[in-house]
Image 1 (cartoon, rainbow, N blue to C red):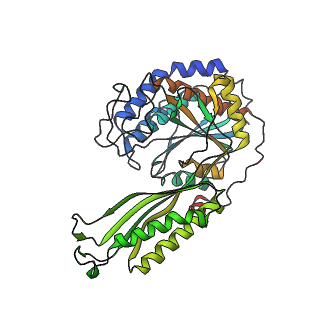
Image 2 (image 1 turned 180 degrees about the horizontal axis):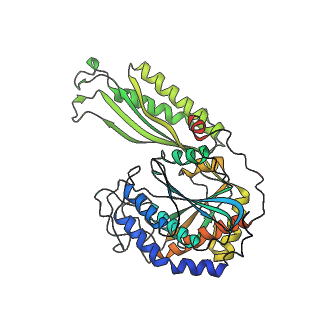
Image 3 (image 1 turned 120 degrees about the vertical axis):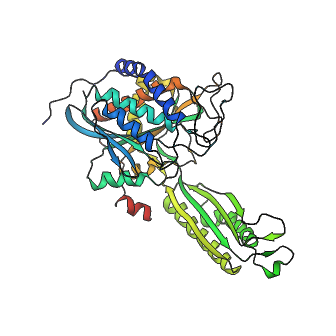
Length: 427
């Protein structure tokens, strides 16, 4: 049995360590930012992460298609806490200026950029790994998880599958996302439901092409789509209790017709549904949605081809005991004025799948500073970050991880999903 751990890092030691490694974190983030890689293509990003972790004696495990896991063993037995960062970029042409001025660094890859903050998340978690690997004066172990393809939603399943098949005992989970709506340096936290579950759909209607002057000789999928769209807009009130929040958006519509006098054979439409209750909102709405699409397509003698119709995330729910640990820790390290109550958010987060199996805490760190020009929305060309908050994020990761491992609080109100990740995805 391992010996009992020495006293862990104090507030001052955590803040000092984060400050000491600030320049490294900023430089690493800039490297990631200038060489972004799309979901599932993060080869160089993953290689750099592994190189940095090996440099401090860690043994990163590359999970095919999933990402990287690395374990930092403490000097005494105890619990296990998992810290996660996403690493992928987006297909967005970055603007070299933010809302006020030129950015500190800009993507060198045309049409690809880190405009959601994942480069920052990855750099901060690598920095956390370097700091804690040199200390190890804590009970239990800390798992670092770097997730490929968060934006696409499909890669995390391989990491969870690896954890489950290899019987990794996880006691708690932590995730943090930079947020451009929140004032720089403030943490937005919330107990219970925080982020919505998400359904993504991509459907092609197949009719019959023809000349625009003779619609009777063709079968225009546009006519079919118009009826489907009207019906789908109405089922929100019919299929789902109005007390259960749900949103539905068709975000893209296209046909193969390139001229106003051509009736195209196909029409494609795609969009998303967001919800907070799997049983009362998602299941009845998705079932009604498919029934309407299939029945109307059949009535118009069109074929409905489902290119995608899948749940990309379940609702993310912060466990109450993990929330209390986070609130107390962040308040002690940064002060009560830096911790605010966060709103319910209709965005979705893949970490919700991890937190379906193990209790956890997910929160936002603000990066909005009008004097720096930061505050443009995520996924926009002018999105930029306040690099001075990286040390804040690093300290928050370390503070929570150590507080969770040290806490004797038993998780009371968490019921893990009864099955594996493939069972959950199948539902």
